[in-house]
Image (cartoon, rainbow, N blue to C red; front, side):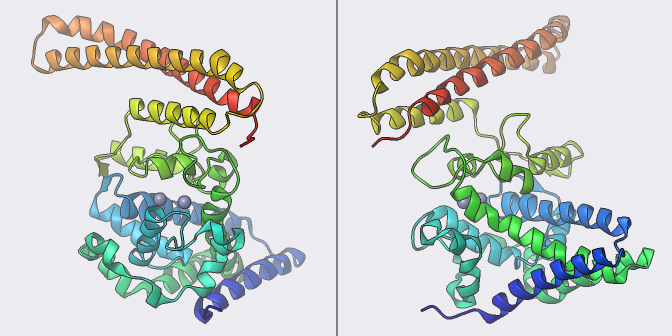
Amino acid sequence: MRKINWTNTLFLTITPILGVSGFVWLWAQHMIAWQTILFTVIYSFATGLAITGGYHRLFSHQTYQASPIVRFLYAVIGLAAFEGSVLEWCSDHRRHHRFVDTDKDPYNINQGFWYAHIGWLLVNQPSDRNFANVADLQKDPIVAFQHKYNIPLALFVGIALPTLLCGLWSDFIGGFFIAAMLRITLAQHLTFCINSVCHTFGKRTYSEKQTARDNWFTAFFTFGEGFHNFHHQFPLDFRNGIRYFHYDPTKWLIYGLSKVNLAWDLKRVEVKQIVSARINFYEKWFNTRLNCSNIHNYYSKFFEPARARALSVLMNLEKTSQRYQQLKQHVQQGKARYERSYALRKRVYRNYLKQQQRALAQAMSQLSVVTKKCPVSA
Ligand SMILES: [Zn+2]
Ligand SMILES: [Zn+2]
């Protein structure tokens, strides 16, 4: 029997009780102010994005670089979710990626859905944690400051500040119960879903080696973190949802920050790598299901043509991309005679690129159609 971590256990029990019962009581008394609800939604987005864009994609995985002001805001606002300091969070998260689905994974899904969701926090001891895997972050003065004043800062931005701000429209009570307690409960459980739901429900599209799954439904509630199979396969990509229509507000925030020079060096995995990971995945998928009826038929009838199509579109895409880059270079070198052709080709290139991307996405989804038609049998 593992020792209970009473601080975590009490906090994770009392906040939802206060948040939910406070909300119901205010509702029954017709005392819910619309300003408080609006503020709670906005503050939830700020807190959630500080965790996903800051704690996760910036500090844990360094998928991009950001200016000190952005790093500071992430570090301070992130505390409002009461998920610990950047150092603690990243140390656990890096271990999760490195040892996923094993006993060394702090939120190992193989120990059960509820263990991965919340149970691990109830028995997790501060001494279990070793900061050796976050030595790079320890050198960052913002991270060190946040770690040192973690508790008082969290109490301020997580509880005092939302309560006081709601006092601006004389709703201190709603501020405490809704904007603080209920919001903390939601922020925590939505993050916990990434460790439980995203390792249980959804599709595996890049690797069957680990339990992580892609689930658009969870992506909607976790600021885009639901494309979790992709994330485990390519943790260095600043995106989790790679298609433009994939709901990933964290990716949009990072992209937006890069447009105003507050973030840079955004890392993207090359399309080529993504397509070949996908093709390899389905190759393995077929090989492990050889005794499924009709599997050979599916392989030659659906998979082979879809793969050939994906590869040929990919080749065209690369050629177009190369030609365009050459042209761009010539223009940058001041070769005026290319300018007209550049402007003209830019438009043509963009259209062509869009068409090719669409064709590639189609070929990729044709690959996955097969898996629906042939359930696992081996
Ligand atoms: Zn995971
Ligand atoms: Zn991660």
